[in-house]
Length: 552
Image (cartoon, rainbow, N blue to C red; front, side):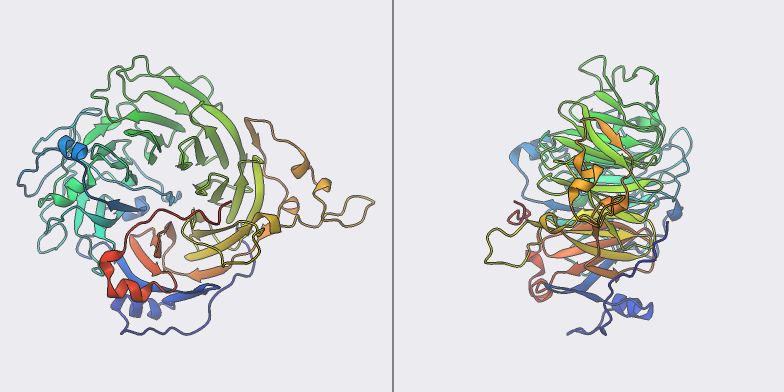
C-alpha cells in the first residue's frame, strides 16, 4: 500500500562547526542531510557505525539488521561468581545448524532489547568445547580476520555498547567511539542471525540473547565476550539445539521484565516458547499437538525440570515481533496475519487485538507507562492502541512504504507550560523501507474524531456518532480494522530521509536517536544541545532511566 500524502521535510542546507567526516561527505553526495530540525531544535548526525568492508557478510539479503544498546555497569559479586574463568584463545569454531532460507520480506523490529552468544552446549547447559564442525559440516566460528582490527583488543567490559547483526555475523561496537568499525565480531557460518536482546538487570551475568534462522537460541554474558581477547564465544547456554524442538527461524527474543533469567523466543510457525536459563537440561521438551492452528493455546511442560517450561501458540504463520510492557505484565505480538495481539502474561490470557488495514504487521512497541502500543507494517501506516479502551485511538500516515520499526521516545519531555492541566504528550518515531525517519507527537486530549455525516443529519465531531467509540470491547476480542473515518489521523512532525537503504531499526537514547538500515549501517543523531557536550566529554554518554514527567 503506497500513500500519496505530503510529508514534512527539512530543506535548509547543511552546516557543521567541524570539518565534515567521510561519512557525512558520502551522505551529502547521496542527497542526505546530516541534520534535521524539530520544534525543540536541531538533531545532528554525530557519527555512524558499520561492519568492516573487509568482512562482507554471507547472504546479507537473507537477514535484516537489528540494533540494541547495552549499558554494562560495574559487576556485582554474585554475577562475578557465576561467570567462568577466561582462558587465552585465538580463532574458534562453533557448531552451527544447517541453513534455512530467511525471507527478506519481513523487517526486524526496534523493540527495545539487545543480545549476545556463547559456547554450544545442551539446552541450557554451558560448555567449553574447543570447536568443531556440526553434523552438516557448517562452521560457525569467527576466522582470523587477517589485518582486520575487529576483535583485536579486549575491552574492560564496562560502558555503553551498540550491538547489531548483518547476515551471519554479530558486531559489537563502543557507542561513544567515533570509530566506524566494530571492536568485536562473531560469525555463525551459514546460520543467519535474526534477533537479539539484552537484560541490564541480569543478576548472574547472563544478560544476552541471540536467535538464529535455524531456530537455535543462545544466552551468554556480553561482558565476557568483550573481555575475551580471542574470537570465540565463551560461557554460553544453547537452547533448541539444531532445531530439536522447533526448526523454524527464531523471529524475536525478549527477556521477561521483573523475572530474572526468564525469556521468550518466538518462531516463524506462530509458536512462542518460555525458557528459564537456570534449567540445566531439556528433559522431555515435547508438547501436545496443536489441534487448531488458528486458535490461541498454551501448553505447559510435563515436568518442572523441563526447558522450555511452556509453549504459547499465538497464530497461524510467523510471529514478526514481540514486546513486553515495562512491568512485564503484558505481552504484545504482531504477525504475518496482520493482527496485533495483547496478552496478560501473568494470567496467560488474551486481552485484545486487531487487524491492520492491509498485509502483515512488522513491529510493535510499548509506551513506558504501559498505556499505549504502537504498531507498523505493510499498510505503510502507524497505529496507536490504547490499553484502557482496548482499541485503536489514532493512526498516522506519512510513510510511502512498509513501516519496519516503531518506538516511543521516553527521554523526550514537552516544552514547559504554566498550565498545570495540560494534557500528557507522547513523542514517538517510526522508520520504514522508504528510508525515512518520522517523528510524531501524540496528545490524546487534543485529538479530534474525524467529521462524520450521519444519514439525514448534519456534520458532527461527536464521538457518540461513531460505533467504534461507543462500543465496549470485550476482553479477548480480536477486532477488524476500523474505518479511518472514525479514527483521529496524525501527521508527522518531522520526516527526514536518513539512509540510502531501507530502514530496519530505531532506538531512542538519552542523548541521541539511533537509526539502522537493513544492510548494517547505523547512524547516531545527537539531540539538540547534546553535540557539543558529547564532543567535549564522550565518556559521559550513558543510558539513563527515562523520565516520566510527561506521562501522567
